[in-house]
Image (tube, rainbow, N blue to C red; front, side, top):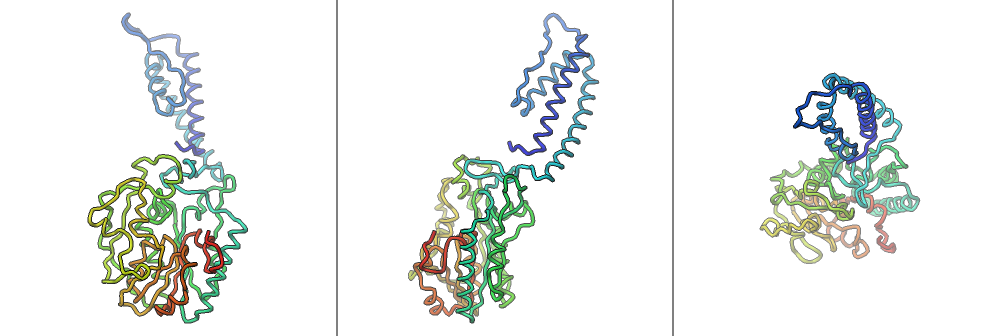
Length: 407
C-alpha cells in the first residue's frame, strides 16, 4: 500500500475516533447489557491490530461486540457515522493544504526502482542536473550543428524521446525535480535544425503511451512519435499521410516484463506485467539489408509463424524488432528523398513506417557510430534528410566524434 499523506491523515483520525468512541461507550453505555440466554456468550471487544484495522476485520469484530454490549448501539452508530463524515472532510482539507506545500509522496520504492502515483508504472529517479551531463549535451549539440553546417544541402531534424525520468509531475520532496534536458538540447541547436519531442499532457496520457515495466514507448506511443516526426518533416517536404495500421497484434496476450522490472530485483505480478503489442502497418513492398546482407531484421516472421518465446524475462522488444549492431538499410523506391536515421532503441518501432516515406533509409544506432563511415553512407545513398532521435542517454553518452569512448 502506498502511504500518501491524505491516507495517513484519514487513518490517524479514524483510529483516534475509534478509540474515543470505545472509551466513551465503555464509560457511559456499558451500564446495561442485552438479555442473553444461559447458552449464549457476549462477544468480546477485539484487541486492536493495525493490520486488522486496514483489512477491516477489526471494525467488523468491534461492530459485533457493540451490538452485544451496548444498549444504545444504534445511536452510537449514527454518532460514529457523523464523526467519520467530519473526519473525512477535515482530512481532505489538511491533505489539500499539505499537498500545496509539496509534502506528498508520488514515488513508492519498489526494489531498486519506483512505482509512479500508486500505479504499476515503474521508473528510476527523475533526471537531475549534473555538470558532466550538461557538458555532454552541449558537445552532442555542437557536433550536430557541425554536421549540419558541413552538409548545407541536407535538412536536419532532432526528436527527443521522453521518458518517465524526464517528467516533472512530482512534488519536490527531497529535491525530486527533473532537470529539463530537452530544453538544453533544443536551445543548443542552431535555428536551421528542427526540433520536437514526445509530450504528455498528464499521467493518464503517459500510461496510454508507455510500457508499465519498460522504459520504451509502447505501440500507441510509437505511433504518436511517428506522427510527430512526420509533422515536423512536413514543414519542409510533402510527406503524405501516416501509413494505416492494419491491426494491433499482441500474439495471444503475450506477457512480458521490460527493463525496469528486470532491474528492480522484485517479482512483478501477472496483472502488473505488460502485454507486448505491435502495430502492423500497411506498407509497400521493400527490401532490407543488415550490413551488406539482405535479410529481415528481428524475429517478426517467427512470431507470426507461432514461434513465440513466452518466458516472462524474454526481451520481446529487442528480439521482435532486432538489435542494430550493424547498419540497417531499407529501400522502398517510392519516395523522392533519402533518409539517414541516427538513433537508439526507440527508433526500432517506427523504423519501417517512417522509412516508407523515403526512397532509401539508412539506420545507424548511436552505439556503433565508431564503426561506420557516415560520409561514405551519405554519399553512397544520396542522403538529403537526417534525423537524430533518442532518449536522454543517447544525448549524454554517445558522440559523433569517433575519438570519444562510447559509454
